[in-house]
Image (cartoon, rainbow, N blue to C red):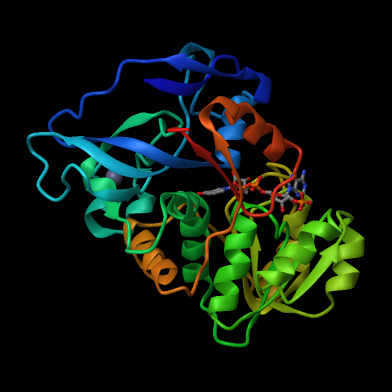
Length: 337
Ligand SMILES: NC(=O)c1ccc[n+]([C@@H]2O[C@H](COP(=O)([O-])OP(=O)(O)OC[C@H]3O[C@@H](n4cnc5c(N)ncnc54)[C@H](OP(=O)(O)O)[C@@H]3O)[C@@H](O)[C@H]2O)c1
Ligand SMILES: [Zn+2]
């Protein structure tokens, strides 16, 4: 079977199609015919050689977290999934035995990791991480959901918001950004977002953003967004953390899940404690979050946004588009094409 592998950690040029053995399910696994796998900035960190999870010794490396497709084969111990089922994978990998696995939430697992291997015609996955695709949801739509939408959904659970509250979304146009805007819209919240691109902001306004600020200059954005936010959803890090803190209301919450604009930020300590602000870290979400999200997708409350699909042989072009900040929402590879 064919897989789009990272053969060098040199950015999009390092992606090539290789032949691999079709995987066996093992006792508790399932083999999936992968119809769609979305890409994430997480994969691009790996491809750029900027991830603690993968180094040159792991090459060729098949990435891809967000798998949707049809079950081809299951292991002898698998009871809840069978060949022919249409499924989507929750890419969380947890140890099952630590305190957080026992008591929840599972994404706090002390040995938390992520599934990789979806950028291939077939993938072996843990069967107990598969969720049924609801009627009417396509594999391409479903593949957009796990990492970006589940992460955004879990961030909302940290923020304790009420209908009508105001949220700030720096970088509102990518996977997590668009998911955040759409969930805010579904919850009846007012959203303000930023982007370097007016064209992309116009599109995100159609998807539910109430107000867009076209700038990457922190002071310009601070002046333009005027007013105090009940929550900031910060997947950019860097200077955006200080910006987010400065536009939070007293007692407001900034949830941080990423570092696209930088891995170090400055926090104003006195403002933090005098104004009772909260800064919360968040990674991925729980399988229950993903199940609830798929319900929202099936009910039409949240419509996953896929900007472009690519055949397996053009996976390099998908990563180039992400690197060039071309897309609104998600990019999806279709390995069977
Ligand atoms: N902790 C977790 O569990 C978790 C889960 C998912 C994602 N993440 C993290 O969240 C971030 C977003 O992931 P994603 O997959 O949604 O990425 P993505 O789709 O590539 O995000 C694109 C967005 O990031 C903005 N952006 C890109 N480079 C930027 C820069 N240098 N400065 C400011 N803005 C920039 C883009 O702004 P423009 O509109 O201006 O192009 C766009 O709005 C990543 O850091 C990722 O690692 C973390
Ligand atoms: Zn654990």
